[in-house]
Amino acid sequence: MGIERRVSRRRFLEFSSALGGIVGYGSLNQLFAQGKLTVTEEQVLGPFYPINKPLDRDADLTHLRGRRFSAKGQIIHLMGRVVNPQGRPLSGIRLEIWQANTHGRYSHINDSNAAPLDPNFQGYGVQVTDAKGRYRFKTIKPGSYPTGLDGWSRPPHIHFYVTGSHEALVTQMYFPGEELNAKDRLFQSAAPNQATLIAKAEPAGKGLEPDSLIVTWEIVLTAG
Ligand SMILES: [Fe+2]
Image 1: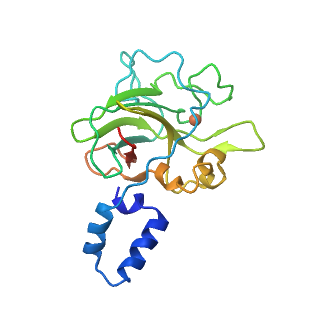
Image 2: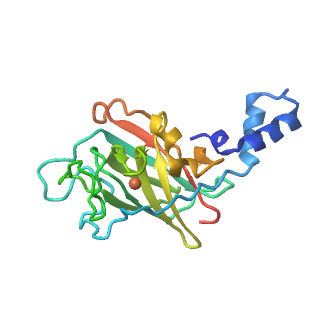
């Protein structure tokens, strides 16, 4: 994900006017690199943080140890970096993720949706960022689900609990191009920094599962 996306519109305008709009792309990029990245917005924990975590908590949520079959749904390779506002990679950051299955159902006692459970979906995973601040999960794209309030349906999203040595960030990652994003009260509550919550998605291509996606999302912490 480019640094440009992390620079707020206001900051972009400040840069643009300072430059008089006459510099080339390369110079502009250098200036952006010196600018501060927007810190990723917080989101509510929600009612479905796992009480009973699966015994299998690895980075592959599509398969539970000992199970013959894999999770239903579109496979996504979810990856990115955790950085500070200056873009410095943060290593040793713990990331927990949890999400609905492809039908939009959580494996959680609080979830009363009628959508089916998927016994082969792990639904929760933990990773720690490497020396370059990177993380990676294999999972499925979560389905949308009704909240039970005024026809409000949550768009596909993945919950993140990010723990560093100085701070914790609870948030949610969203997918680009989802119609429900514009109507989602939680996503919109991140205004004016909703863009910090949107991942980039593209077809995975050769060597990976047909129809799977590469989803990249950079997380910016204040200190790490
Ligand atoms: Fe959720």
